[in-house]
Length: 138
Ligand SMILES: [Fe+2]
Ligand SMILES: [Fe+2]
Image (cartoon, rainbow, N blue to C red; front, side):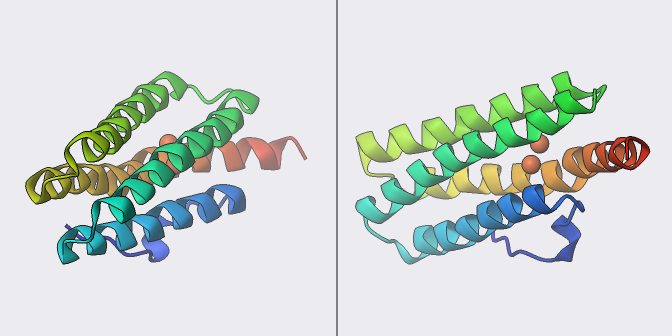
């Protein structure tokens, strides 16, 4: 399962687009490393980055939602929690088991699918709402 940044991920809020881009690009590198059978250190480092960076991104995103009273914030929070759980699991399993190829492939596949559908559906819908509220409050 591969992923590459392209315009279909753009939601139109610069700060979020930059963070999404960073997440997507790191996943591209990570998936490649998994496929290449890269060493445990590299995988562990990247999994830790993804877990931490996703956390930072969710905080940023939820701040926008709170600021503009986004009605579907709870749904977003649940989605973010699911991803956070998978990211932590990936990191822990790599730390403990040195990431078997099967595990890394299965988990990254699931996370990549999540990133694609979450940004394109949930985050885009949220950004449309937030941008309308931003424009109205100017
Ligand atoms: Fe989100
Ligand atoms: Fe997002």
